Amino acid sequence: MCTGRRDYGGRLDATGDSTRQRACGVEVWEGGVERKAVNDSKVVANQLGRTPRGAFTVSVRCSYGYPQVIRVHPVVAGKPFPTLYWLTCPFLTREIGHLEAAGWVNQLEVRMMEQPDLRSAMHEAHQHTCAQRDQLMSPEEKAALAADGTLVGLDGRGIGGISDWDRLKCLHLHAAHALADENAIGDIVLQALPALECSQQKVICSAYE
Image: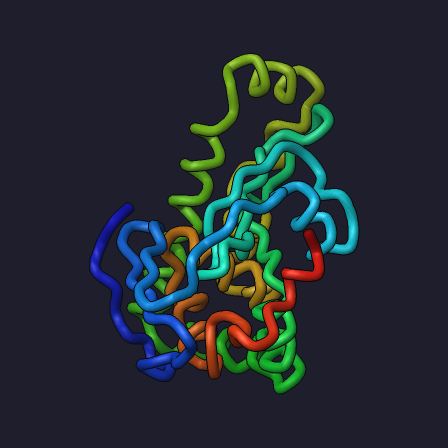
């Protein structure tokens, strides 16, 4: 799903130490420091404060080479796991938490209902997530979930497992989805942040290796 992005009323530019270009979920950095090899499993566990559930791959990294978003396999320990993309970056988690504390979840839900194009874009993002999750599951996994009656629990559950697509649940999951794929609400959230990663003088995740 690689289409042009629109502005839905968020701030147009988020400034930081690096200039990021996004193309179909691929992050390309210009002017950032040299990336370094990191132990993703160890760093992600320290970012989250726990060992992540299920198999995961890193979808997005900051310019320092640390994971910002991971994609988790939709079946964990034989059970459906509807949330594909998780925000792991402690800097973004903190900054987006400030927006949630300021009431942005409710404000963006209201805006989504007032802007039909924004609502439509979000419904398309949910539909795409459902299709992507279905593609990631093997036939054997689908059969096992169907046999124990849990496969139906994924029906209509979009980003973050949301069943009511006119609700947002939380901003972190939409920001993660926007970084890894396309998500109009997530774009608004990211555009409102003062930066998209921590400063070179204080790289938080350097302590997590």
